[in-house]
Structure formats: C-alpha cells, structure tokens
Image: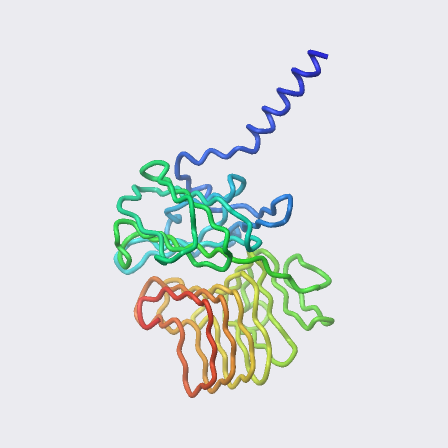
Length: 315
C-alpha cells in the first residue's frame, strides 16, 4: 500500500513538473509558439510556420497562455529600429485566460492599450514579466514600453473569439472544397504564386478561409457580388496589397490579419465597392511610407467594425 501510494505521489509530482512552464525569462525559441488546443477546446494557440522567414531577428516578447502554451509571434522593425511584434490566440468568450508576457528588455513605464481594455489582475511580476487576465474575446491589446508608441518596441496581441471552421473534407494543408465552395488554407505557409499567379479573388457563394496558424503570401480579395474571406490566419504582401476588393457589392471580410513586411504600398484597397462588411480585421505595416491601412476609391455603404490598424502612413 505504501509503495503504491509513494509511486502515485511521485507520478502526480512528475506530471505537474512536466506541464509547468517556466516563464522567468525571455527566450527566442518561445517566439515560435505551438499549435495547442486545451482539453475543453476553449483555448487555442498557433505556431509560426517554419517556412516563414520574414522576420527582423526575433520578436522581442514571449506570450504564454494559461501556463500551457506559447503562441507564435511575428515581427518587423519600424523605421527607427524599434521592433513591432504581434501575434494572436483564440478563446471562448467569457472564459478567463491568464496571459503572461516576458520581455527581452525592461518593461519600464509600460502601458496596456487601449485604456478601456477589459483586462483584470494586471501584475508586474518582475521588471521584464507582465501578467493579466482576459475574459472578453475580440479585443486587440497593445503593450507599449516607456510610452514610446512610434519608435520603440511594441507588442500587439489579438485575443480572438473561437469561430466555427467550414465543414470541408480536409482540414490539412490547402484544398478547394466543392461542396462548400471554399478555398481552405489550414495551418502552414503558402505562396499564391504557386497556384493562382499570386492573386486569389472570390465572389458569389465562394469563400476563402484562413485557419489559425495559416500564412498566405500574395493577394486575396473580392470581386463582383458577394463572396467571403474569413478566419484568423494571415495574408502577407508579395509586392501588392494584401486585400484587394474591386467592383464588389455585399462581400464580407472577417477576422484575418493583413501584414506588409518591409514594403511600401497600400495594404487593403477597395475600388468601386458598395455595402462590404469588414469585421475584426487586423492590418499591420510598421515600416515605410504609403503603408495606408485602408484605402477607398469610389465606394459607398462600407461598414467596418472592431478593426485594428498599425501603419506608418494614413491608417
């Protein structure tokens, strides 16, 4: 009995040690993140694809979610050499989630933005580690160090609500599902020049879905009438705008990240469009002029809700 009890205690102690993550220091390895789903499916983190190389060194932060998994981060230096890091995770709205941010340098006189962000239990654990709890989803939280909004190191963290993925035949890699008329991009890295000449446009009942953990290089967009682009993955410019909507009426864009890495040019463009609904989109270009976040030409009836823009030029 005592041997069994001792073995059980040792097993429990070993299990605790196995799952506990030491967040006492920043590590470049932790910026890669992991693809993780909690046991109750209420929290999800996503790794940065190994093929993704558009980085300025390594992001200057680690983001640990609920003490279980790091979420993958991306970055780009701004024009002054400061580093703009960003990443995201998904959780069920109303579920308390502990977020621990470890910084490569001192937090200094830090700010969590926006000022009215619905976070709680904010605690500076050490000079380089900050912890808080978030329960309300679809918030875009920014950590600014020493009040240096423009030129210094900044972390943008997108705290998404979990969304329902399309019911496609395969959720691995890329596929076009004829039943749902969905261009599906699962976690991983994709270059649109390999399949679509660099640009993928949809209309009507067709849609593009970028799963969490997916990174698409090229341009996606809407044309004609209808069409939908959604998901929590990212599209990265390959010389043009990341999102291009032309002569579209009634299209929908929801949740995606648009990122321009060290290129100049407009990020999301809308030409001769009407009644497009854009929600929860994130647009990021920390470097270079003419990096406008959203540009409209001859448009009407456009609706934007809960979108985030970080741009060096007109947002």
